[in-house]
Image 1 (cartoon, rainbow, N blue to C red):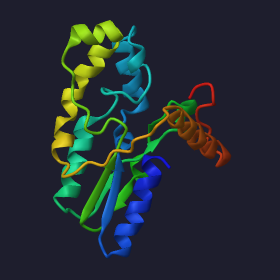
Image 2 (image 1 turned 135 degrees about the vertical axis):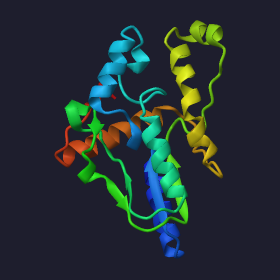
Image 3 (image 1 turned 180 degrees about the vertical axis):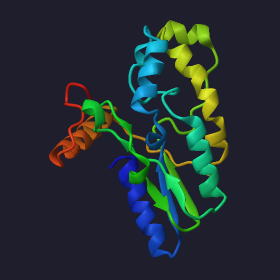
Length: 189
């Protein structure tokens, strides 16, 4: 059971209690494929920015505006969707007509992401000692503070074996492929 599976279950549970619950993911706000390529080109030696996933690879302004609209209980809020299968698994933001429209004002918003709540370490020299690419990614974390400030509570999924993360990602990629949406192969995961 990963983050998305848990969130999907909770959405159903809240609905059973008569609450309007919306779900969004950090993934929904990844940069477009073209913008991700531009980010990678701007930092050609930083392998952590080559692909989506790390701080810096999200459209923070779009995420902030969407979260604000949902939390302000606006109706008819378009929530972006990200197509991880596009461009051979490198992904791209889905066209707006494929975005989910949250018709009703929400009572509960669930916002999931592997780096939710992460704050910058701020010690560039120490980070560079761990990994020379890490300091820049760490500096991008400052941009996510507004997202984090909007959250009332946090739930953290703790796992005892990090290999589960790769197994879950591989399972998700295989499910996409089985549905006819080619994504990353096992080696790319």
